[in-house]
Length: 73
Image (cartoon, rainbow, N blue to C red; front, top):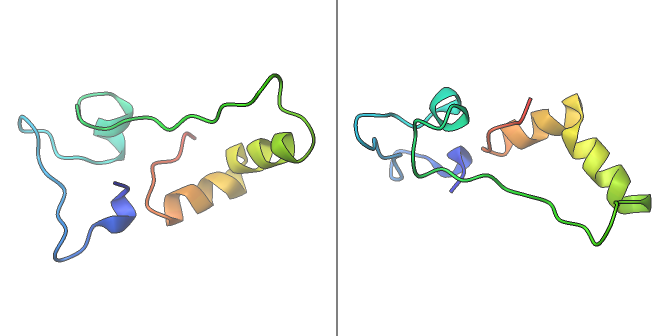
């Protein structure tokens, strides 16, 4: 579940004394997070490559963050 789903009724759980946040997820100390991967059949090209390039751009990573996920950059 992304951070965007958190609310007054939905809380993030502290695991072994570690609060989930961008730092603890990225450094691996928050143990129940997971990475999301994009797989392609061969090297990406065309619209798929354009989408991957966009989502990895600064603008795309800002959208990732706005939707409640942790950006890569």
